[in-house]
Length: 270
Image (tube, rainbow, N blue to C red):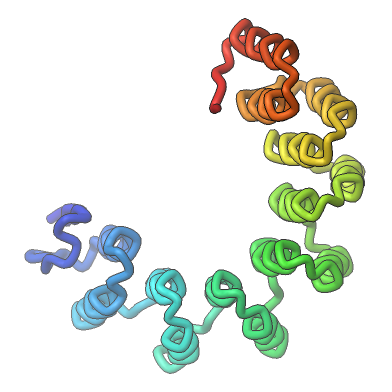
C-alpha cells in the first residue's frame, strides 16, 4: 500500500495500513511535517517514536529534521540535549548535525556557543565543511568581527576547503555595509583568482555599496565589469542605479535609465 503524503493542514494524522517497505516515503512524510508544522517539534518526535514502534529506527536524517526544528524555534538547550542523545540510540552525529546546531546558535547571536560546537567537532574528529564555515563567517562578518571571519577563511584554505560563492558574498555584503567597498572589490578580485564565478548578488552588492558612498563612477565600472562577464544588468542593478540618481535629484539620468531598462525588457522594483 502506498502511503499518501500528509498536507500541512493535517500534518499529524496517524498513517493506517502502513507498509514497512515504504520506509523512504515515511521519512519524506515525517520531514515534511516538521517543515510545515510551524515548529511543532514535539509532534514530530512522537511520529519518530511511531516509526520505532514499526521497527524503523531513526537515522541521521530523522534526527536532523527534529534537530532543525528545535534550532528554528530557538530551543537550543533541547537541541543540544537532542544531539547528545543521538549516540545513545546508535546514531552518531555527523557534520550536518553539528552544522545545524551551529546555525541555530548563530541565528541567536551566540557565537561563543557556535564556536564551542566547532571545537567539539574537532575533538570527535569531524571536519567542518564549507556550509559550517559559511554559518560562522556570516555572523562574524555582519558583526564586523573581521579577525574571526578572516581567521576562519584562512583556516579553510589551510584545510583545503574551498570557499564558495556564498562565502565571498557574505564577506562582500558585510564589507559594503561597513562602507569598506574597496576591500569588497579586492574580495571580488580574489574570487576570480581562485576560479569562482561571481553572481548577480556579488556584483549588485558592490554596485549598491559604491552608490551608498556616492561613487557612481566606480559603480558603473563594476557594472561594465559584470557585463564583460556576460551578466547583463538585471532589474536589481537598474533599481540600485535609478534610486541613486533619484536620490540626488538627477532627473534626466533617472529617465534615461528607466527607458534603457524598459527597452531591454526589465522592470523596475521601485
